[in-house]
Length: 381
Image (cartoon, rainbow, N blue to C red; front, top):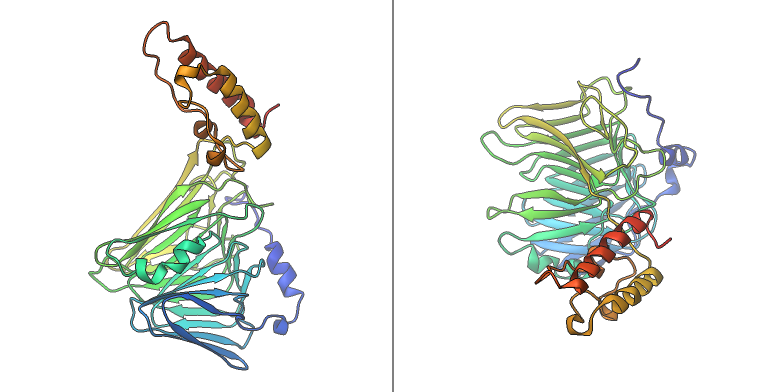
């Protein structure tokens, strides 16, 4: 028996391969929403001249066609350009992306780096997790603060994924971070750090929500805060390097490699000799030089029970009827607190009986336990 199951060619890749290379042009509709940058569109190249230390740019689409290039000219190696693609389709990168600083590319529909394409930057984040409008608008200010953070969360459970078929290189302290519902690497991802320096690491995270954190020195790192809530069709492995890759696909030079996946309990993730949902040939991941390490882990989060708006309203009525007037407000949730998707914990707080005769409190807790069992399928029966 093979150690790893055969990996089919990604469906998105098959679709793209059937289309001519010229199907994708460069980025379009760039709108600077934070900081300062000038965008110049050429026939086959796009230049972003960033004059502020940090900037955020919203794009109608962020693609790079074969033979095309996008270059970020940034103030220094610590600069960051946060780019959000609102096309509704995966960002399709078939040319070259270059920067002397850090480039973040955020697209809820996913990112595909095609075969023959290249990314060469100081630091990189590719993610299918979303950044809020408020955080994007305040990015230049927030990222200038010491110890800043940026929350990212999955806004499209049915789409996404990061697929690397080309080459990704970084040479700065912040290395490379890939974060999304599904990570597939068939090309090469290489981060080269500096000896005796803690940076230059590779973080490869499959999750439903994360937080990007900067330490006092400005070094970036990402932590998983929530699981993949819904596996993409045919993606039982959340991190995957196919058996067809015989050499090194992921390498940190003078840095370490972190592979981590997070999923909801009972999700049908694939078994693996490494960790559930993580599959790669043993020679495909490497860490060499100063500060080298390789870690991999899988975390199963308790399943989140959710309610539709209609079920939330129905549950509120049940709770209202169960509450004694003197304890009103301790368990029920007002209209402005109910969101289209909420958890049982949000609707019913824990109640601590004050005495043996506190029957109302015990009843509230019993209702909560009962509804929790009923709602495992996601709604009222």
